[in-house]
Image (tube, rainbow, N blue to C red; front, side, top):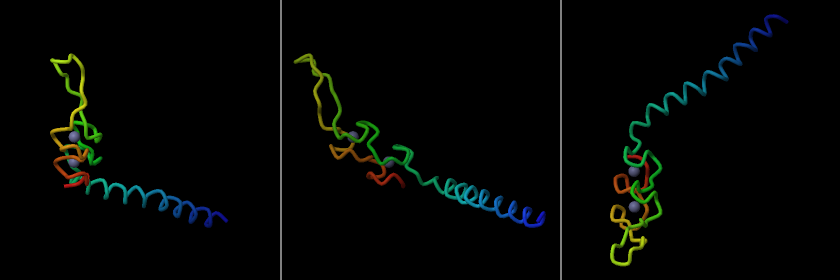
Length: 85
Ligand SMILES: [Zn+2]
Ligand SMILES: [Zn+2]
């Protein structure tokens, strides 16, 4: 019975260690994550909304204008909205 328990313990350690190792490997592959949006694919200027608020000094109001960085698409201009480069 004691042997069965030690085998079970080893199996349990494997079950914990293997996902950690796999995660560590996929994490190191994240070097290709877009540095501008951090992998989200969203435009960093408008946060993916496609519009930004700009102060209009003539009307003294904030106006929603099309984001100049992504041209209104909301996608990161560096990776094109994919999140990786
Ligand atoms: Zn934008
Ligand atoms: Zn990006």
